[in-house]
Image 1 (cartoon, each protein chain N blue to C red):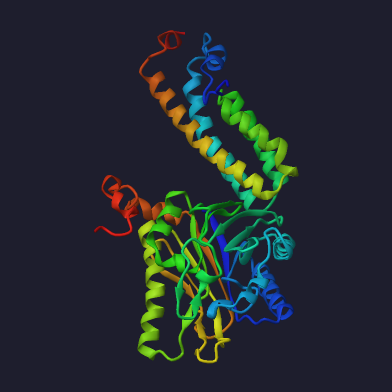
Image 2: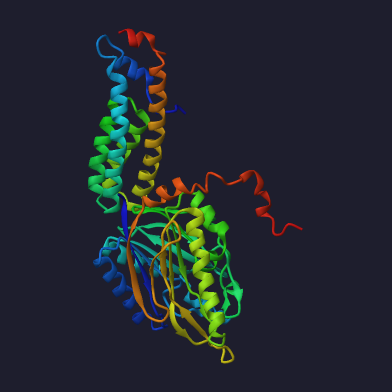
Length: 129
Length: 294
C-alpha cells in the first residue's frame, strides 16, 4: 500500500523551486505550521459544542491550506473529515479529530525538519534561484 | 484557553425506578442548563447498591449494552447536547455480567465503554459475586470534550490504573463511585476511611498531572441482611486539579450537583514544571506486573 507523505517534496519542488520564488518556501511552511494549529483548535472548539457543520467547514479550510503547503496526509485527513463530519455520529467525528490532532503534530515536526534542511543549504539549487 | 464546564451528580437512589430516573434526569437537566458540557453520574445510579448481599435474583437488574438504559440515557445526552458518563450493570451473556461505565456523546451515540477492572469483595461490598472483571483494559474514551480516563470505584485505590489511563492520553480521570461507612464503625475510623479515599485520588491527580473527578453516592441504604448494619454512603464527591488541589467538594449527607469550569490546558503547564512522566524509570519497573516480590 502506498504511504501518503506528510510533506510532498515533489510537489514543493514543482511549485516553489522556481526562479524568483524559492525564497518563499520557508516562509510558507512556517506560516502553515502556525495556521494548522489554529485551524485544529477551531475544529476542536466546534466539536466540543457539537457543531459538526462548522467542523466540516473548518476542515475544508484546513484541507486547502494543507494542500497548498504540500502537507498531503493532513490534506487527505481534513478532506475526509470535511466529507463525513456533518452526517456522522459525534463519537466517530471525535475519533477523526483526535487522529487529525496527531497528524497536525507530525506534520509540524516534518516542517521543522524541512526548515532545518533548507536552512543548511541542502537545496543549493533552490537558494541560488 | 481550553475550558470545560463539568458537573457531578451526587444522589440518593431508591429502587423506585421511575422516581430515581426522574430525579437523575432532573439533576442532569439542571446541570446542562447551568452550562455543563460534561456530566458524570455515580456508580450504578439506576437503583440501590445491591451488592450488600449475594442474591441471584439481583441479576435481573442487569441490562444488555446497548439496551433500554443506554437508549434512555443516550436520549438524555442528545436532548441536552452533553457528554454523559454513566454506570450500568451490564448483562453480556447468560451468567456473564460486568460493572460497566458507558459514555454518551452529545448526539446520544455511545463514545465508549469501560468495564470495571478491580472488583472488590469485602463486607457489604460483595461485588465478585456479581461482576466479572473487565476485559477492555485501561483505555481512555475519546469524546468531543476531551479524552476521558473513566475508571470505576474500587479502581480508585490502584495507582497503576490511573497511570495507565494517563499514559494512554487521558485528559481527565473520572471515578463513578459507591462507597460508604459501616454505621457501626467509630467516627474516628469513618474519618480515616473517607480521608484516605480523597487522599489517594488526589494523589492520582498529582502523580499524573491531570484533574480527577470523583462522584459518589450519598445517603443510607439498609442491607437485605437483617444482621448487617447497612451502608451510609458518604458523598463527598469532588473535583481536584492537576496538582491535587481540591477545587470543589460535595457534602457527606445531601444530594447535590457539583459544578465547575476546568482549565484543560493547566495539565500541560503543571507537567512542564513537574515532569513526572519524563522521569519514570521504565527500565526498572518490570516487577510491577508480579503479584509479589517473593
